[in-house]
Length: 96
Image (cartoon, rainbow, N blue to C red; front, side, top):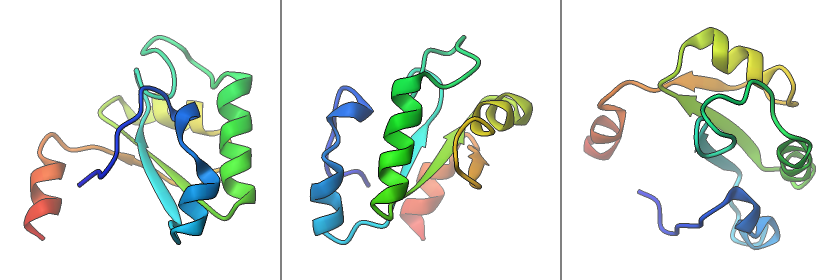
């Protein structure tokens, strides 16, 4: 369960997360990192991923979009992980 909410990923205080021992962030792709029709990450998104990586925070992208869309977007970032979100994944995670 998320314990905080921000309007934009750029409002996330990565240093505060590091201080709390956070090792990873799971984020959606469309309308979270970029608009649903944006094919590549913006320079600002790339810089945010790079900063997170340098601070030891792993970013995982989860998306309902097709795998080729997510893979194509992710190749521009220095990440290895992306997951296809299933429609009820949140409910299953909470039950576990």
